[in-house]
Length: 215
Image (tube, rainbow, N blue to C red; front, side, top):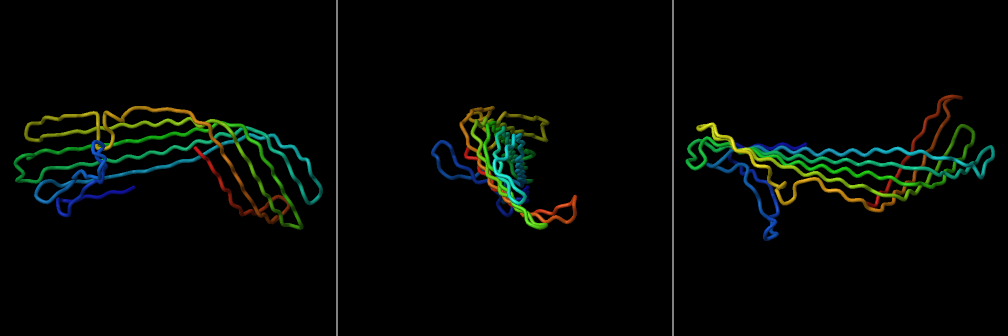
């Protein structure tokens, strides 16, 4: 989360790229002698997944075991970005006196992976110590969904007139809507754990997992 506000001084502006000439630009939120303003942003991200595997041991003894994994994997990554701003004309500003303009840009993405998976799981134990290494590769499809919405509201307090437009600063009629596509994707995972048996029914472990999702 990020928030900023200014009574007019210092200048508060949002950097943008003007889509017509393709050049860097900025939209003013607060400016000395003209308007005060605020900007608020929120960015959230969530990744979760589930998998089901059939395990078949093909090397096994009292201290060492290697198993083949075959199964299905699901992953989902959701991201959301909200940017809102509000500007109010300062007293004495004739052109925009009594006017407040607020805008909101909303971006949502959802990536869902479905795929078949194969992997190997190797473990070794000695005394109270154990070590496990797992490697898996899943091949499938990523369904990508993007939703873009915008809204701008202008209020004139002297007349009571409120005007609403279905666009923000970044979300414009040219790019708002819901967009979907599916792409072939590969998900790879490598993980390792070290364990210590504290009792017959209690084990403490520490480990690391690396996950790669190419699309």
